[in-house]
Figure 1: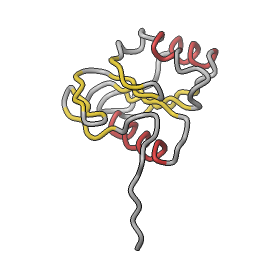
Figure 2 (figure 1 turned 60 degrees about the vertical axis):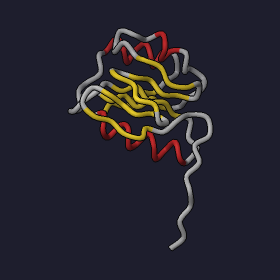
Figure 3 (figure 1 turned 45 degrees about the vertical axis):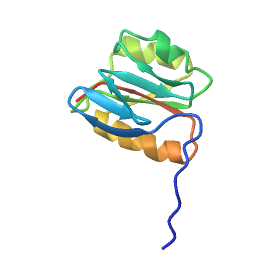
Figure 4 (figure 1 turned 120 degrees about the horizontal axis):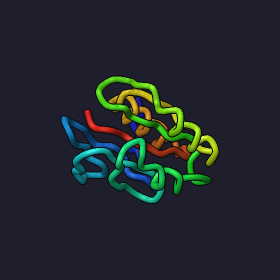
Amino acid sequence: MRLHEIVFTDAKPVDGYGPGFFRIGGQVIKGAVVVGPKGTQKWGGFEDLEVLLELAGQVDVLFVGTGADIAHLPDAFLETLQEAGIAAEAMSSPAACRTYNVLLSEGRRIALAVQPI
């Protein structure tokens, strides 16, 4: 079996997470966070659309982690992202982090917006 080191180019991978925090690229961030091609920043939740709309044209899919369990995304949230050309995929935060890391390693145009577990 041949092993290859994964190299992340523009965005940083999620190294870990726990109650109330995420570790992204070695840095611990408390609370909700957005990770994308331009770096990592805090996220204010579903009402904080400005930081997500800045991703328009840079990503094809935004993975939205809704906490420990999967939840429906608010209609206004989805409509605003769709109008900006951003597809959003809801899942639990652990699943969103794993999916984000796999697709990031493949060089895909993705971003992650997650709420803590």
